[in-house]
Length: 623
Image (cartoon, rainbow, N blue to C red; front, side):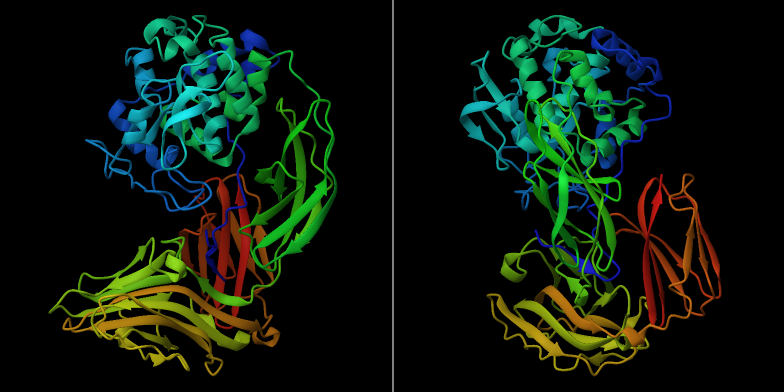
């Protein structure tokens, strides 16, 4: 997957939040172990559980199961179709393509009970418990049926993301099972431990409800709950796939939705305390000799010496500025999605197969390189892109697509084919660029056109005010950018502009793609890999106060941040972005030295201040 980078808008994927359980939520379980701990946790998570209706689940999925972690596009996060290493085979948007009938993957999505409904006769509140009822492609859900979730040896069916059904390979059972991909095995194990705990008072009666589903999994007890072979599977999945940020966020959202939590996400060590109390309790040694191997403008590569353990080290967790940034089984890691020219504090923890975690290594400070680009947009993270689409005429507009960009990657497209209807469509940089801050600027981009002979222009304006009527302002062709004129070809014609010299531009300008047609010979244009390279001109930014910014309190505990500048500015604009790059708030800061921002929810944010000749971005934390 490509990484979208703009000097203001970034996809901030390396910073994560810790689980936010309410103060005192688990106090009554303090000091308990074994089945006593399990029973007390059952009391805690049963109290406050506000059972929602089965129909409510689709609305709940908007907060519990949106993809803010892989494609980061807000689509439905389905564990049976998600491809963590690349493009998903298909995707669903919330409340669209809900099942319904299906015959193939990608037809529709529905609600998958990870503990099938047949185990508990579709009774409430289990039927609508969002902790274990997840969105799923209808076809894959149907192929899973009510088979146990375990490891497959010989598959008789495999989904497009690699989930599979077939003969069990785990010692102790030889029937048919269904195996999810490794990315979500720990998630599922912790959900099963939740179900065993939340429904401790009734799960003992589910064993014989389904002979090829519940009977091989459950042992008919209310304390141990699982057959020994299956408990080994769940413990292994739990240890090999530690709690992820996606689980933490889902647990928090589920708590907001129905009033209870999964304690094994908040405290994964409780799994062993209940089901494996005689397990290894010795943590690995602390990783040593943490070293920076390489840096780029948005990544830092690190390595360290291997830890030792009385059993074996299973993985290492990387922390950036005190927050989880990923894990690996090797002794090196590349942290990506970082800001250019920014210093980060990094440390590493070791974990063993029993879930024991070492203390953090000695901290290391590392600084990313300065980005050579003031604009670098490949449209992989729409709508979090560096451009704004504006249509002054017709119902056609610029839209993000999943292909037809450079090397058939995602792109942005204007499909003007609509005869006898005029179009006035613009794709304009969301923020202006001050060329006086840079030197040796060049422009590069990929283009593809099909049909018609309507040209696409690349232009800039120094008087545009950022509004919805760009035609009212003066736009000049970008120097040395020679665009091809479409030749009515029915097959896509591709071309690139490579490092066109645009250094003659001065002042603060917006860059735009301009598409105007009267509808007689409209053209479909695709645009990708838009880059403006520049060398920063240190004399271009006047240090007359913008860099002398005080942010307090930071971190904040009440959602309120104060900004204090050493002087006021006549044209200051302040924009707040969340960790995904989504704009949260825009403030007119002109002629103000102090600005108060309130109502921010817990998380990481970025404050961007822009005035003519100056730009500054700062990170803030709301606890």
